[in-house]
Structure formats: structure tokens, C-alpha cells
Image 1 (cartoon, rainbow, N blue to C red):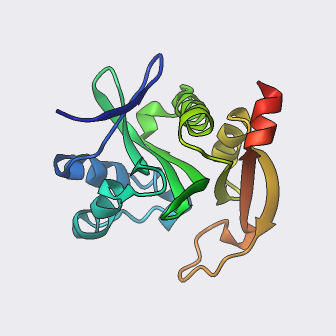
Image 2 (cartoon, rainbow, N blue to C red):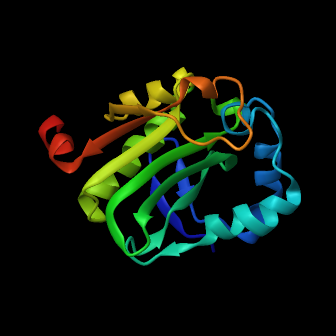
Length: 185
């Protein structure tokens, strides 16, 4: 039986299993999905098995649960959401992220899942601050962050081992604190 972490009107966020490896290979094999992550270069299946999947299966003591969730709608795998503590032993600050397949783009799934995770984090998991970042040029992801209640914090320039198109503009960080979330409710 697969552990369901969260359900929304249209989404089920469930724990990953080893059996999800082929779904992840397909997701990370789409050049458009990987555009702002690797410049469109697919993630090799071996990397999914040895690095990605162990990260997705990891439990975080400070959160009392995992930090990554497979997203499904009507039983169909859409991608995943991240709601992972930045410090292993503390739920105070979590990073929000999402990676959905193209079939799910433009349908509100990223915003729906993000809002639900944020609400659960602040009401049940002891989260004090949610942070998220993306490439400055990734307007779609930035819009999801804004629609989910996060606000722009800063632009920064990281060390890209292999720069990809748009990386010269840097990355942006967004955030939402518990206090701001409570004020907006």
C-alpha cells in the first residue's frame, strides 16, 4: 500500500517507491521538462536509480516524513513536488519545488499542489518559512510561486559547472513566512 501524504481536489501526493524509477526516467528524459535544470539534457537512467530515487525516498527527521512526493491525477503520474527541510533535523525552513510533465503544464496543478503543501506545512508540520528558487528566466515557475503566496526575495548568481541558456541572468529566490501566511488567511 502506498502512503498518501496529501490530497487536493484533483491531486494525490504520495510516497515514492522503487517502482517509480521508469516514471522518473521518462519525466527527466523530456528536454522541455529539463530546460531550466540541465539545458534540456536528459538525466541518465543510472543517475535516476543511484542518486535521484534515494533522495526521493529519504525521510527527514525534523519533518517526520519525506521531502518529495509523487503527484498523480486520476491515477496518472504527473511528476513530483518537493517540500524538503533545508536542515535535516529541523522543519523550520523548507524548500518548495515541483517538476511536472508537459501534459500537466498550464492546468493549475503546480499551484494547487504548492498551496496545499504550504498550508499543511504551516498548520501541521511546524514550518516557519517556505523558500523556493528558479532561474530568473523561468517565468512560468515564478508565476506559480507568486500564485502560491510566495514573494520575491532576491536575485543571485550561482556557480554553474556547465552554464545553460539563461543562467547568465541568475536565479531568483522567493519566500513565505508563517506570519505572512497567517496575515493573508
